[in-house]
Amino acid sequence: MSSDQRSRLVRAVQQRKLQLSMKEQGTKPDALGEWERKLLKEDLSDLAPMVDQLNAFEKRRITDLKPSLNLQDVQIDGYLLPLTQSNRKVTEFLLVPIVGACIHVPPPPPNQMIVVRYPQGYEQGELFAPVTIRGKLRVGHSKSNLSLVDGAAMVESGYQMSADAVTAYKK
Image (cartoon, rainbow, N blue to C red; front, side, top):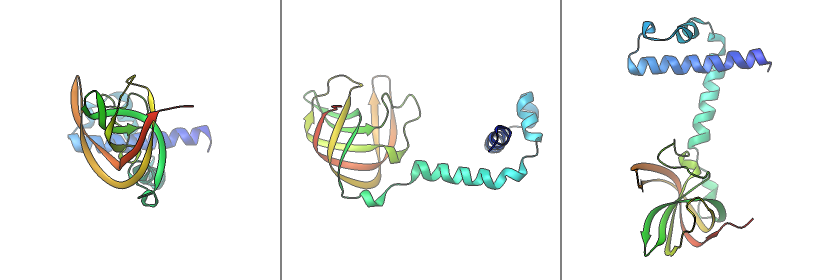
């Protein structure tokens, strides 16, 4: 795909998002900026099938779970976000793929988060230090209330685990 073709495709995706946003919010074209009005007038209809394919791919990318992982013994590295603590030990947490993933930025998609229960507790050191978990993975959506010092939010995860081990990550 040439640079011009990619640019047109990006504008077609932006145009679709703008149209959906306007419909949801009841926004009229005269309330938009010059660039947005120009984007709406551009004929990108030939790219509609490709935009549909991209949207479908993105939806699958962030929602599809892997049933083949159900009840598999796995070892996964990630970052711990505490949900429940007892005696300075974290007994339930979210395992997320990126440091600092929380309620202040869009959380990772559910298929990238695991609710981990570890009854013996993990004594958390540094807040942003990675960990390694081992145990049997279960596939299925769940929601957890993630509370931090400055706010709380319900977050959805696509996997759960009762961990056999939680250790500090080692390279």
